[in-house]
Figure 1 (tube, rainbow, N blue to C red):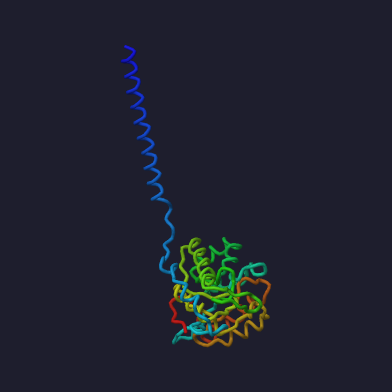
Figure 2 (cartoon, rainbow, N blue to C red):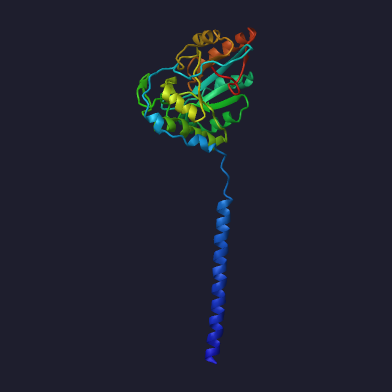
Length: 281
């Protein structure tokens, strides 16, 4: 009889073990299912993230400056159009936000292309996300550390340049990923810190799917111009001009100069456009 009870007990124990194994298996399957169903990330062009850097590392640049080969300074147009571009540079002295300027652009419905640095984004994340949702504004890449772009070093305006193809890649793509993760937006225009490059770094930017964009109107000279100087610089616009200004220095003369110049440019027949979709030259 005892043997009978022992047999029944073993069978019950075995049944419980099978159930436990099944439950554990179900939980594992559920977890595996959840892993496959995790929150989807924004789509990224994987080809843009994989470029053979060795060919760029092995080349010696021959050019250095703002207007090297393949840097774009204007856009093609048959209309009287101008593109306003505003840099947000970031860093210890560059994390400000010119609220007066942005409020004016929004109120007057003036489109603008904003070149935004990762340091500024991380310091002003909620403001950045708000700007990125504004149809008037086009968000583009102003780099990760605000470095001049080179495959073998150098400096511009006292700021050290990137020193390798890997550093060029990181300067462009780290900020690209940050913006993509925060907004889902893909950027295709790049302007380096100081707007200095060598031609090999520009080619690498092109290989990553970027056009490098500088300017033909120095709108505020790194936010050092007075409002009168900003106004006068903008009034020199011609069809297809790209103006370089700043949106991260609220104590500068930039906002007031823009506020004074825009009505005058409108009176002379100018329209303001984004760079999106424009043929750059």
